Length: 133
Image 1 (cartoon, one colour):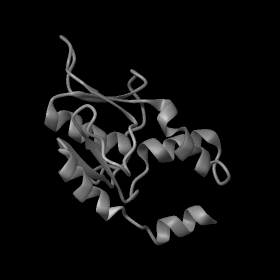
Image 2 (image 1 turned 60 degrees about the horizontal axis):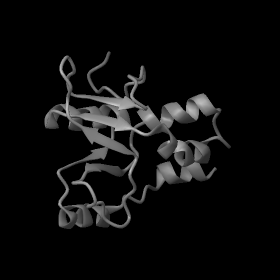
Image 3 (image 1 turned 120 degrees about the horizontal axis):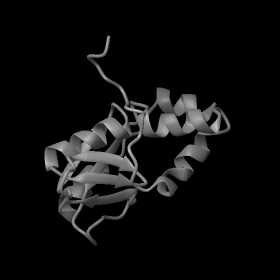
């Protein structure tokens, strides 16, 4: 299947990194341990909340549903690893061509800590942990 071939022969968007720098990227990380785990790393390092828009991920989930059921496809999109993609934050209005907005960055309210949310909610999925037994 195409999904297997994409995994075996990834085509990382290397040119997007340079475009991000030119646009004024404020944080950027490769997504190798899952969107939630790596997004959480950006949130903690930046002292912010990343809130992913679940509808912005629908196309990614739909691409996997010919091979996986909807729940497994969603888990792969949020917590799978080795995507060979980049996740970045930009100042408002500065997202360069080739990037797409999948959520918002907001400050931390009293009683909150840096975190990543999906549609304003905590997610039980976590992503790849190299140190988990």
